[in-house]
Amino acid sequence: MAGISAADMQAETEKLLADLGQVAVSTGPSKPAAPPPPPVRTDASSSVVIQYKAKKREQTDGQSTPQSRQTHVTSYSLQVKNRGPPPAVAPKPKKPQPPKEEVKNLAEEFPRSGSISGAPVGLVAYGPGLDSFEIGSVGKFQVSCPQGTRERDLDVRVLGPTGSKSVEIESLGNGQFSVSYNPSTAGEHTVHVIVKGEAIPGSPFTVNVQYASFTDKCKAEGDGLKKGTTDKPCVFRVRCEDGVAAARLRVHILGPSKAEPVEMEEEGDERTIKVTYHPSAPGDYSLRVLWGDAHVPGSPFTVPVSGDIKNDPYKVEISGDGINGGETNAQLSYLVRPLVGSGPGPLSVRMTGPSKPTIQAEEKEEGINITYSCLDPGEYCIYLKWGEYELPNCPYMVRITGEQREVSPTKCRAEGRGIREGNVGETCKFKVLVEDDAGPGPLNVSIKGPHPPKPIEISNNEDGSMDVCYNPKAPGDYSISVLWGGKDIPGSPFVAKVTGAAVRHAKKITATGNLLKGSTTLQLGTVTVHTCEEAGPGPLRALCEGVAKPELSLTNNNDGTILVSFCAPEPGKYKLHLKWGADEEADHISGSPFEIEVKDE
Image (cartoon, rainbow, N blue to C red):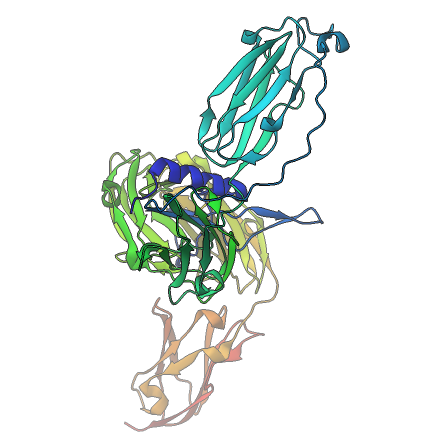
């Protein structure tokens, strides 16, 4: 068993991708399905998703919608021993050729243009080598130029899936030239014909070099060519007739996953080759089965595969010094290597830390190479996901060493309605824009006013900006301090005017303490009042009525609780009213008014 060479494999893979109009990897920043940031987050972060990007499908309304999943290409081959003469290949029907005509002097029919001195005009290239033909044939065509055109004036270049092709040019005299080239790989070829530095009309020409139509000496059969599921391997067999010549059996699988591993083995009397493949994502797969350069009958086969996506993060390897950290401003890299059976992915990469890292990705033969660079020293986190699963040992904690950049708060600015005004009961929002050279930060926001809102939510948009949200529950003027690296940004502190009626929920406030069970004369009793943000703005008001006037005092513990102290001079029944809010709007807290019985000492 002999495998296909790396160069040929790459060429065929590029050709198959070119047929689909697709690229193999996309590395721009995008939003990965990463865990959301915590309520207050000031670290910079960056992310990138490495995946196959689908070709857009044109729609009649001028919009385009990407396909749900990109096509992966898997190519495998098996060299089979000689069994007789070469396989018979059914020829394609030839196109009718026009009757031969006498070659005319085109220079007389198409005089030179006077606008560009010496520029060739009236040039014609024709022949089967500029049309579609089968691999194994020589591409030939003729170029007709004005009389006097020399061979050195003619430049012909042929580019195919594997690069440039050698071209032979033969002068026939009188400005006529014969051109031939021999493609080694099927696929789209581009032919450039240039005379005296100018492309002739129609150049470059697009030529589709195709595999031979089919061979009738082999046939493929089995359930693996009809349908499949992601939870078990798909199998089919290629059966050869007696006397089939030595050739290479090639199987190209195009579909939502690479369908690896692909196993090919000869069975029995070596006239049957068993092919097993393992799709890991649902969808339609196209199987191209070729004996030598010819499709077997029925190829390509369309195989619908059902089931769930099978991603296995434990079959993805991480290696390289970059996963252990490094110096600031250095290009640090590590390799992510999906192994056979890992599934279609895609790989998502996300980093957080003192500064926003730059992340680049490049797909190589050995895996996906991730390169990143950090501007500031400190601890960074690398989050890696394969499909919907986080890779083992994630997040990776990397330490970046080096000099700290100077903090430049002047490189930051705040904008948005929430920095100037807002309404009670509505979320107020503003954005802080941070330039790359602003330094490491972090961003801190504090708000003072009639009822400082809590919490203040800061979310990192991972695009050089952060959103700040707060929800005021009382009207008035609020002072908003925005600090970058402990220093005010331009305009800070800002003043935001909040309008509307205060929002209060006094019943969300509770009271506890021994005083509520009773007391004795001249003994100090206490009640602890538990406030909360949902209750809205206070203040707490205390009023007591009874047989005598008791001593009352309120102490703010600055931990969300208020201590109410009570001392009655005479025995009897008292009623303690605890209200939340302004005089005219105050409402009883939960359980108020409280009845307290005071007995003689």
